[in-house]
Image (tube, rainbow, N blue to C red):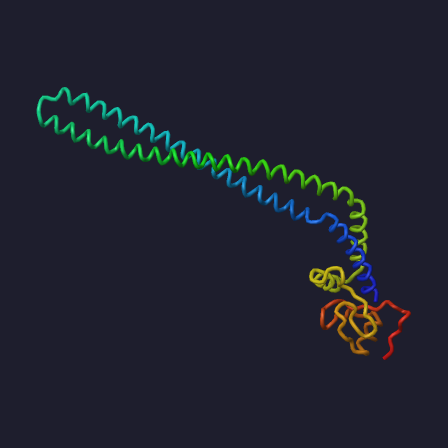
Length: 240
């Protein structure tokens, strides 16, 4: 009986704690969602910035190569004016054709890198805007949540202390059963029987089982809904 009476009191305390939690509404979930979203965008922003830095490095390298090829092209063109044989002319012409192909390839590569750079810069700017909006929203929601926590923290602390005092006096298997059922059933984990029926799901309880429940000396669960059944109403004696 001792354990069952403790569970009845524990349920009252847990219901008070739950009511205090419910005063926060969906703020805890909203804050967590915003934090997760902010973390994801920060990571995306970091990756985008690294990619942009790499593109800039490659573009700088490409610009350097293009400049070298263009200088070679100018050098070969100058040499054409100084050739003294067809063989020399043909050799320089071949070099010019080869360097022109490299210039075309380098220009194409630089243009591709320029396009990527512009796209990444635009994406980075968009991520910056998202970060600003999300940070502002998170700040507002965190402030509101903290205000609600501050408003209820004294009551919450008192009920938490009461809970700790109660669970010390409940056998571990009994407490584990209670907490497991509460995760599913919520506030109505420990339920009084109503005549010969479960007060939760209203399933019929055999008279002999009702007497056993009234004795309050063992943990008895409803066979239909799994709640912990108790009996407190002494004004309504059960008859077998």
